[in-house]
Length: 207
Image (cartoon, rainbow, N blue to C red; front, side):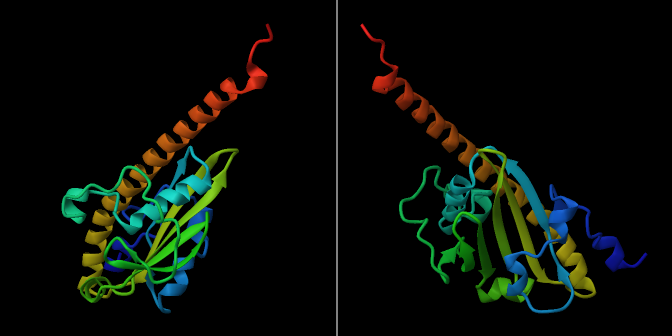
C-alpha cells in the first residue's frame, strides 16, 4: 500500500469524524474557494439541541475568537461566553479568527471562511472552511464543518496527516464549545418563554 493510500483513507481518522456517507459526498461552499486538483477534505459533524438561527449566531462569534483551546490559539484570551452585539452583521471580507476572512455566507445556513495570511498559506495552501447549519427535528440542528485544501505531495503528505490530527482536536473542541453555548442559550430562551407563559393574564386564576 502506498503512502498516499495509507495516510488518506477517505472516510477514516483524522479526516472524518461524525459525518454521514451522504454528507461526505456532498459539495460545500468551501469547495469553490480552492482550485482544481487533488484535495485534502476533512469533515466533522455533530447534532446540537438548539435551533439553526441560534447556532448560526454563535458561529458569528468566531469573528472574535476561535472557541477552541484559547491558551494555544488565542494568546490565552478566553473566547466570549456571551453574544457580542453586532457580530451577526456579516459582510464578505471581514476578519475571522485573525487568520481568515469571510468568503461567503447565507444567514442561518452557512459561514465559509478562507485562510488569508500569507505565512499560514505558505504552509497549508488555499485552505477554506465551511460551517454549515441545518435543521434537525423541531428545534435541533446539524452542524457540519468541512475543510478543503490542496493535497500535498511526497513529504508534505506526512505534514498534512500530522496536522490533520491537530485539526481534529482543535475543530472538535470548537464544535463542542459552540454546541454547549448554543444549547445553554436555547435552554435559557425556553425557560424565559415558560416564565412569560406562566405570568400571562390568561393563566391567572379567576376569583
